[in-house]
Image 1 (tube, one colour):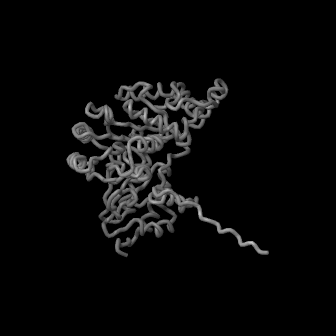
Image 2 (cartoon, rainbow, N blue to C red):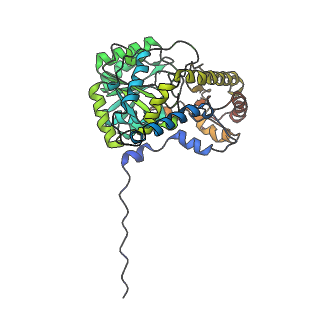
Length: 406
């Protein structure tokens, strides 16, 4: 007697929010361009040869030899007090009076953004972003189910009048901005624009999420105070920071400074996510801050990055088509270019990659209708000689262009 096999049912589908948001365009490009012969202007990676390997290794050795029981044990969700105290001191010296209890240590500033989305955004809520916008922020907000609306702006960032109109019409929960050396454009919002945004938030009731992963990488000009330091915004601004660009991204150490009620909500969200950021990494970073001169290390890194930025700026006129426009970023890691409108940088990318060079097309950074003639170039990972060669290859790959309608 033959017994028929029972039918095999399919498993339930993935959550709709995951299917809708998808992956990172930048990560997809990096996977395609991982060949060693490719000069990769697409990544947003710090230069690994500039990591303070000896200083970081010494800090880890110290905490593992002197306090192994503490370093390898569970910790509080808020973060190690000694690290929060030293972070608070650094922020206070830079013009934002901060106590250790104002801070939540996060597993990279990316987690801080994710915790804020959990604490503030319900599915269907409207959030505002600058245009173009940091790609991973669009992912986080999309996963939270937010309705993302871009604020019109100019070279100085989001337009305050347009922001006020959108706040009245859309009743959003928050505005997300990277005001200093923005990813992807490299622009910095001047003090007057920051004050105007803070005033809109105060008048109309709005959270501002101020993401500052690049602020210490300044090469020219004077430092601009944080939005969080503005009197109108102190009770409604969340400031995100990170060691990724100034110490090492592999530590996965960031922090979140927020008013008490919102910070407590983020603590609850973090308890559900990962309990706490790795203790040994926190203690090693605290030790590094105690015995090493992080500011001097950042100054050394900035000097190298300045030379690389200048090398890219020097080579762009010959590499990019006539009619292309770009700015001179005062710091950070990125340069943004807008080619003539007949160019579609996404369509052109396969041809450029065949020349063993890569960039990131600008379209994925837009919440609204994209400008397909834009692209982002990272200038910190290659030497000036490699940058010069990469730009020669880029010029060959862009030769002739691709029309948006082709």
